[in-house]
Length: 580
Image (cartoon, rainbow, N blue to C red; front, side, top):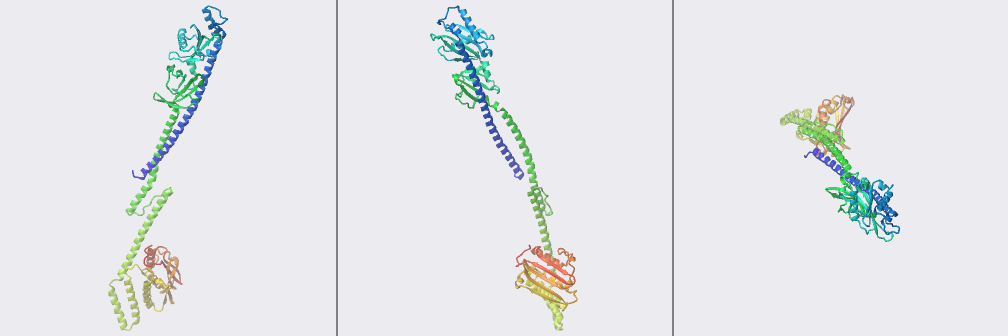
């Protein structure tokens, strides 16, 4: 669980879940508001249209009532105090009124549409006159109209509306008629309105499954309801009686409904429609479910990609750890593979470069140690019983003086000094230029004794401060020896050897110039292998570069028959510089 791969997996998973949650929440919030706004707009339109239709129908019914009431034949038959009234038989009166009702209902669309089920007129003596559709039972119809007549008030002039009941799904509109002469009550006309036909105004709302539509009077008695069992009952809901519609949420029987109400002011009605919130949001729920399924699929895909990506990212780390273990075991030739990604490719190249440098440094240190060991062995060989050698040389020198042999004495004395200098310098890796120069002087003295006047040597020091700087021990003497043995010894005429010490821009430059035999420089291809040059030249160059780096070392130029120039360059070393 502490691996980078696992943490990367958790991070990407968290980011994906966070993004999907935020977008899902935003989607849900936005769509909910949009659906609610759409539902509010649509329900408002339906409610307005329903109210307009209901008001128009009630206006038509009310107008028809007034039309019936103003009919002179009906009024004359009901108003016994009319001057034109003649005593007739009661049966004749009934026939005349009902015949007039039939005449008034001819071509009446309310009657043709069966919205008006029956028309009853009750006179002041409670006698009744009626006309109704053949589908109705006269006895039952009479009972229902009598109920409406009894529930109405004879004193009111306005149209009275008697609500239906569960057993009688009929709405009754009642209007009282007064005599034109005495202004007394002469009769009551009742229109029986079929609730089923009137409820067709709710067809737009019933398209929603489980939707409800209600029409109540000012006493909150149900006049119309999609549930007929509620007809005539009182409801306790606080219906909005304002002039503007407002969508509300109402909980009924554990289910949430979106409810909107609006008054029909002329009749003191309030119409209300309710739609199940679940039904309104059903399409949204389906879309949300599909969204969740898509998100789950995307999340699963991201998890798979995360696992693959984390494995791909962690692979270079595993490769790095594997190669580090190889290095720890001493396998410095191990290499990281190459990668396509820039950062990983840089990591691989840096690691491989590091292993190359480690391998080079190890080999370099090993070679340097080998050279130092070889030099130490040579020094030890040179120190074999030095007191014995000095005693022998002293004995030879004493005999040479005793026999007055100056030549032997001139050779023996510098040789003894040379050996003593060699002995005193043993154990040192670097010496001053002054000490190196002294050693060279001893060597030149011996060679002058050997070759007599066959060559001349000159030593030039541009600045005496040069002598205090350090250089690798005995790195110049082998070059002087090469110049004499390979250059001047083969020269038939007198030779010249010049050794110069001077400063240059990056340190000290030492020049060994001879006018000896020379050689073709194309035969001297490199100083990196002792197979191509003398061991002295190779060792001197290698020791300088081991100590100071490849910017320093020995450079040789030569021309056949004209001589050789050897240039040695070293930094300004006060004895503190280590191997560069």
